[in-house]
Length: 112
Figure 1 (cartoon, rainbow, N blue to C red):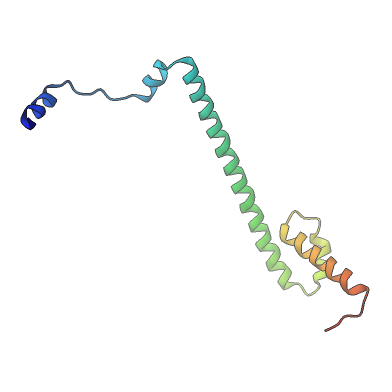
Figure 2: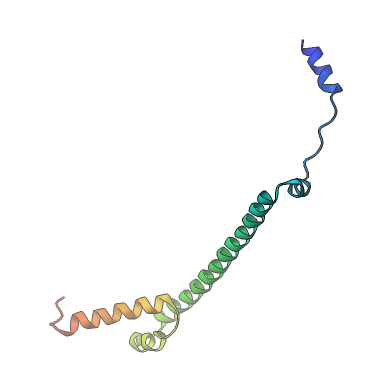
């Protein structure tokens, strides 16, 4: 039985290779439209991923530079007022923290 099966398989014609372009061209117009839509959506999503990655990388670099400058300065308040207008998330957080600290200690005596 096994020998007969092997000889039948060997005598069968070789399978043809599947060509993606040929499959696309032979597909129905609806299938082609869906495939083109999926390709365009994939390109759009990858553009979003790359743009956000570049933006996050740039902000991380700016935040590291600001943090190094923050710890080197003696007058943190002057640095924060100078840096508050920049688009650095670390500067905005530090500025908000300093403002909150000033507001909370201004009304009552400071208790240590």
